[in-house]
Amino acid sequence: MRRSIILVWLFPVLLTQAGTTRGEDVSDLLRQARAEFARGGADAALALADRAAAADPKDPRPPFFRGTVYEALNKHPEAVAEFTKVVALDPKMAEAYDHRGSEQFKLGKVKESVTDFDRFLELKPEAEPGHWKRGISYYYAGRYDEGKKQFEGYEKVDANDVENAVWRYLCMARASGVEKARAALLKVGDDRRVPMRQVYDLFAGRARPEDVLAAAREGKPAAAALNERLFYAHLYLGLYHEAAGDRKQALAHMRAAAEDHKIGHYMWDVARVHLDRLRKEAPPR
Image (cartoon, rainbow, N blue to C red; front, side, top):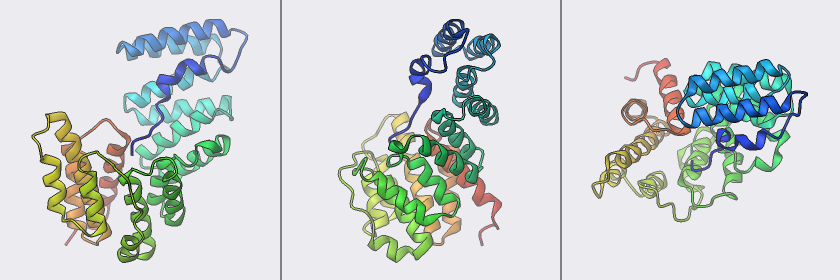
């Protein structure tokens, strides 16, 4: 998926919110903290945020900032704890629910992620069509019809996203079977990411798994680009095989995506969470 909200970079907007009796001190400390974090000084940034929280314990901005730092550091339990502090201080800070939902998902707490995403969208209903993360959480929560509808809504945001069509397919395949899902596969425009066109053709029944991998390797891409291509190839091959009932191939490809081709994107967490689930199931025969 191509759209994601990274609010740590939008943090200056939040500096104008939640006015307090010592707002100037808190704002100054948080500006310094953000500058430190941008320079790579996570510990210094957290220390400044601690000082900001001490300056006004009722201000939700310091724990929100700490949450985004822990999020960036992949310290998911710590991030959840900070965003929980935020919503206790300000139950209407929508972004805190959205961030906590993402972090809950990364911890494998799918139902909790749905609850948080739902609350975020209650507060910001205009964000609902583009919230593909909730669609993925719906899928893993077994709420396939709701997932299908979420991905149909995303089509209004981006009609060129192969991943959106595939996740709708996956929801339908779980609920109604592969044949019906393939027959109703959403039409997609020009998704130029490699190997997304071949991924689409695979789910449409017009390509083979080896075509997807060949497309990912084509053209001698640089190492980073090749790694990303292979991540998405293996992720969607794993999902394809699982939908088709081949758990052995699903496990092999999901392991390759999550362990061999790590990328800095939410979809890598999806692969990791999926792999954990596969490993907890009975071993393939």
